[in-house]
Amino acid sequence: MNGPIDKIAWIHLEHGKILSTRSRGRNAYYIPGGKRDPGESDLDTLVREIEEIAWLSYADRDRVSPVDQIIFDHLHQTGQLH
Image 1 (cartoon, one colour):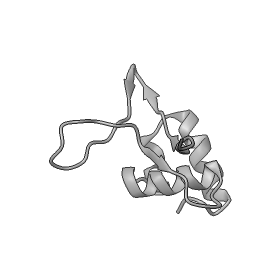
Image 2 (cartoon, rainbow, N blue to C red):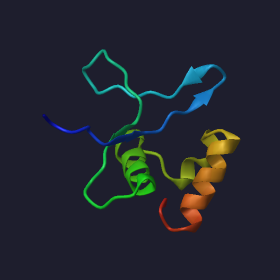
Image 3 (cartoon, rainbow, N blue to C red):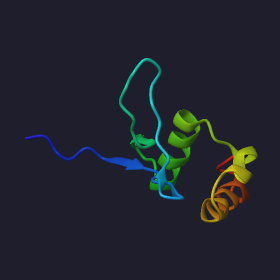
Image 4 (cartoon, rainbow, N blue to C red):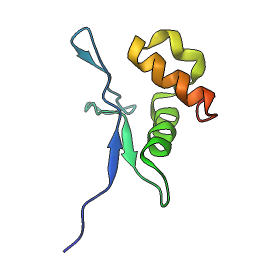
């Protein structure tokens, strides 16, 4: 039997809406996230997935909620979000 699949996701709710993504040419939407690379922390995985899937960077700080701005600030100050 195979073990669990280790994944992490960013769930962003604002004004009763949830941030989701959709691949070009597909009808299904999904929550940004993905599988952890070997040795990655939860935070490392989430930062990498946000950059890969949602194309967000620190320059997008004013486009996210106040709670997410705190997260963006922390990631930027620690050199994890550029």
